[in-house]
Length: 245
Image 1 (cartoon, helix red, strand yellow):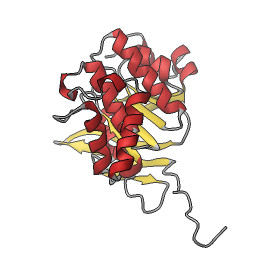
Image 2 (cartoon, rainbow, N blue to C red; image 1 turned 180 degrees about the vertical axis):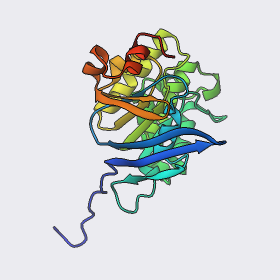
Image 3 (cartoon, rainbow, N blue to C red; image 1 turned 90 degrees about the vertical axis):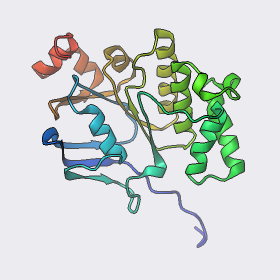
């Protein structure tokens, strides 16, 4: 190899959580969380309200610092990997500009040059079926269209890892199908998906593996098929039966 060859960036994955704990206002939200996220499988985090799912996702993404324990990305010097991972929230914030400009602005913040960010923004819009809405103001789009735009904005960054927090919450069935198809497409393109959801249907359709969280602790981690056929914990069984919300 030539001396001036540029090597490919080292993978961020695996992402390791070592004995993570988190407290807020004197309340324990997470305790003793030790997990490793590797490339490939789509990971869905399930659990009842108050289990700590969204807090866990924010700690992974770097928006929150754990009270105890540590978050370790594989790549040295990557910090929290912010430039190579992205997150989409349940209620995405849309800027007062067009759909296409929303995507391009995210790329600008990531330091992408003008010519490249325009082509990448256009490509992401097209990939998620929003090309016909590129010139529309983002804030007048429907909830499902805004969520797809948020996915496009994240995917345009070409993240190695994409964190999703309840991406289909409060959407009608048609919009939910479109969002799930987009997530599947992003995952198939090689991006690691880590998703929090309360929707068992979405979890069954999208998950390769399931992490079940209850009272701030991981009770199960297993392949999706065995989990939904026969969970190992009574809490997970009650959750699947709708007895634990």
